[in-house]
Length: 82
Image (tube, rainbow, N blue to C red; front, side):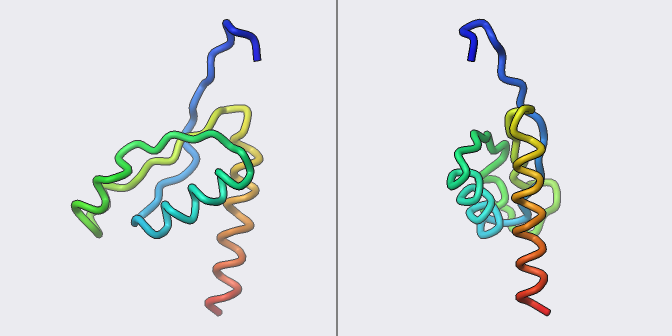
């Protein structure tokens, strides 16, 4: 990446609780996708309050790949719980 290039972080998803956030972080880490979590610890202070979710942000260039990984994870979870 050029030293002058800027990273543009875009919204990927919201994690509703610490468990979901841990899984998302692990998935992104495992695939070497950089991320930032806004409000990561607020949901632990106020569990179940929809205003305090962890907003997962990724580089705009990684967004499509991250969305595919996340959709596969959600499909896998649905198949397991059915």
